[in-house]
Length: 230
Image (tube, rainbow, N blue to C red):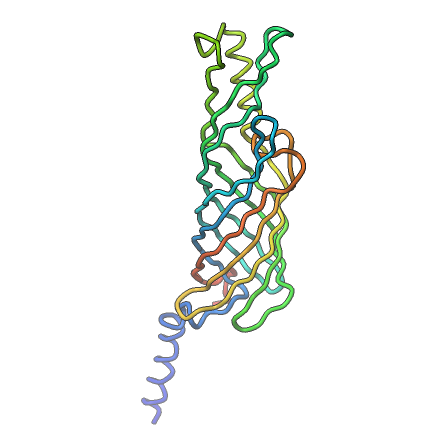
């Protein structure tokens, strides 16, 4: 009997450090999750003095560290869009007031947020988050103006255009998040909404609305987020 009891205890120990660490048996609290996501971004752009609100596909990954009532969220994503913006005024003469068209391609975003988990069940975990997003236009190319034989008339105009583009292609903005995570047999599914206030110092903001995303994906529990006593 002692031998059988000892083998049973040993089996429990082995299960605790092996298969018991699989996703179906792990909880939500004190864990860290790696995930992938896809979704839609709604953004604003001004062209021909008209504010437009198109959508763009996005994809990326995130990292969620949980405690009992809160946690930390980090993510990186890329939005796939192509648009022209009439933003750069490179006039070297008061009589030339026509702005230059800038072709914009792609948006990269890094997000850092603190999380709160207001109500938790065994499977469903709603959450809210507050933090900051750093966003950057991947490619911003100035276009040749109608009637000009070259892209730039001189080096002064070139420097003005390039410095203006660099100023308007990146920004940092607050971000608000609302979502929920559902525990599934092999992973956890999630859906979330993010919103960032408008910023006039950025190509994709008209200053009158929010930039929002709707995202969904899967997260996998990679283990405990705290050091266990041994």
